[in-house]
Amino acid sequence: MTQQRRERRRRRVKSESRNAYDFSKVYHVSLVGAVVFPINSSGVLVYYFAMIFRHESNGTVWVDIEQPTPGEIRTIAREFSIGERIEAELLTPSPLPLVAGDAEHAMLVLHFPVHSEEGHLPKTQEVDFVVGRNFVLTVRYEVVAPLHRLRKVLETNGLMGDGPELKADVFLEILFAHLFASVRDHTNHTANRLTHVEREMFTGKEREAVLRISDINREFLHLSSAIANHEEPLIRFLQALERRNFFGPAFNERALRIRAENEQLVRLISTHRAVAVELRETNESLLSSNQNESMKTLTAITLLILPAELTIFIFDMSVPGTPLHSNPNAFWIVIGVIGVVVGTLAIIFARKHWF
Image (cartoon, rainbow, N blue to C red; front, side, top):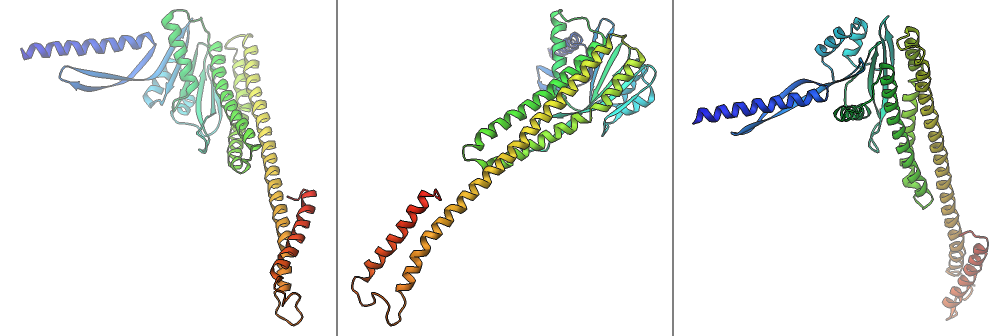
């Protein structure tokens, strides 16, 4: 009886593993590892970690690798005949943008800014592009949201059977469109935060707005510097593809669209950053105006109190000949004099709008 249960369990685990493998084939995903966790005596749960995504269309291949190992890079390099220089660059992250290549391949390394929580330091995510005649390879060292969403779109289209036939140059334009759209969304999100701060500025929350405007300015500065660093390497990369004539004359128009999107991002970020600077100056003016009003009010109060103190000091002197020294109504007379003086000054200050 025990032997029969073991045999049934072995068959069930084998069947589950086969189903998981078949599921991965539908999505064109290479499985690079599996971990088996026992649940109970009746079965096991199998988790697969997919780090290499592969999509083929019309003889063109897009391979997306996340957190690559040296073995994976060597395998891909052999498959697409990638040179040693490019292979070495793919093994580790690059701190700066980079353009490299050989007769059959062109490589580009860019760093894209990503959204960070309010108060946290901004950061960037690196994406490496390697382009050949019939393939596009992207390598990244962490989860990059726009590429992850693009993978899901292609997986869904593949399951439904209605995906368009895409060539390498089209893949490349789609990749840049998704990455630039993500940066644009990041910029617009930061601009929306700036709009909320602007509304609060004119409702008496100028002091709270100082820190938030500074944080938004820092975000725009980070966006501006990251996108500005794209311009020269991106132009060199696109020119290298045009010289190699991988995709024919039609690619020239695609290259212009990619450059135009990058330039549009630069202008968009520059515009929002200028607005942020103007709002910061406006907020500083509001703070300064409020401080001036406070100082004017304090000065007016001091001027009101000073005559009263002077009057009390004069009548409080214990010297011969002090007025009202022997008068039993001296207190009320002094209070009346002080009231008249303070009231007169208050009317004058009110007419001059000093408080």
